[in-house]
Length: 240
Image 1 (tube, rainbow, N blue to C red):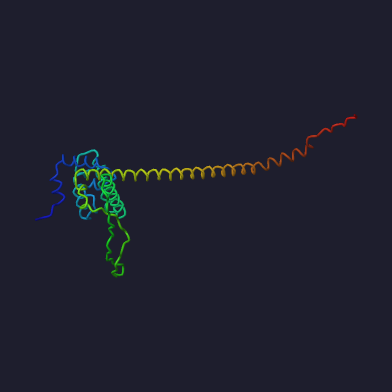
Image 2: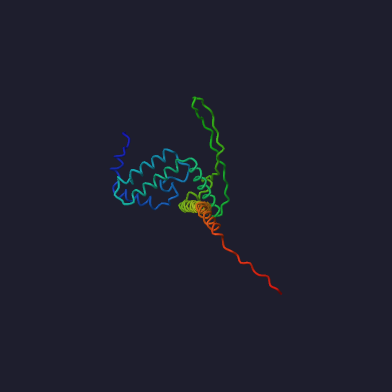
């Protein structure tokens, strides 16, 4: 059986389905790449990310669908794929997912047990062709879903999804506030530097004007001396 081509997928999806997918992507929480790519909240397989992105990108590509916001949806899809293939970003997202699960379980009266999942060592090859074992100290707290059936229910999944949204939103809010503070501090420093530069410029201009008027002042003084200056009348002492 031959592999499915991009042309086959393009013909398979109708314009209506493509428009529906554009609207779905646009309605997703922008900071949740799992929701955008419709992937389960777990460490994704690179192939699964690639397949999900390929299928959806063909559906909502601006050249393939007649929708005024197709480009916006496509950009969100590309960003989601980029985040899930970025190791550091993915690690953060997985930490958020586990935190959301723990909070949801605790809010529903469960005593939560977590286990530390350590990244296994891998074999790497350097530029000279030498093979060595590389170990990572990265680890993550993981909730075993099998021990908590509630997480498998529709309500549990919805609660986790909402909690992930809440955590990511709060993180983004803190990030923006910090950025605003840094920009304000940077702006204050910049203003201070500009004022100092302006003061130096004014002083330099005043010094220049003073120096340029030096000859005029000297000549005026000489003219004054030649004319004998202004005579000062002596006051007569009183005879009292």
